[in-house]
Length: 243
Image (cartoon, rainbow, N blue to C red; front, side, top):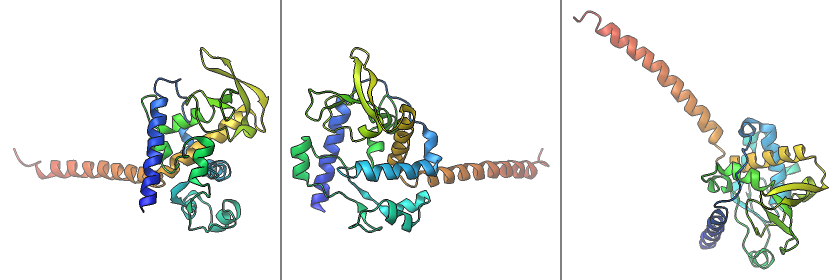
């Protein structure tokens, strides 16, 4: 328990320092929020997360079997999203040694369970930040990793999705304009769509019950509206003979 608390505090420090570093940066692009109601997009986002993010970043408060809420069966989770040593009831942990991570990246990669909720700021939601951040990497040979980011300058994280996106370069430093120098496996439109799916999953992971909560809230509001009509008519009927 103490180790988890220490790890949580370190992750929080990373998030806070990142938020400070991002103050006054470029405007964030708007995340396509309709992806949150698309189970296919959320499933693809979960696949991208497991294959590209879970190597370094844990989601230690999320269990694999919670992905059944996205329409996946436990058999599909085992076949497509689990490594050989993991069980469907396990949390999304990583085997990366914290000391090695700090040696390689200079900081401990933060836990991503609630990363979307923690990144909200004056420029937009946490999903807006992540959607812009994951599309803002560019080549910078002055950095140890060979990568930089328009949203988070001098970020320690390398661009793990570069094979999908390709390699961007800074075309206009004054305005922060990027251009694609080397094509990736996806077109720019396909990459933006994939990132939107990944961000949708990260947003969902921070509060898996948010869809159910929204639907319940709409039901409650509809019930109160109907109840108000009945109460109004009952009140009118009760006082109709009173002069």
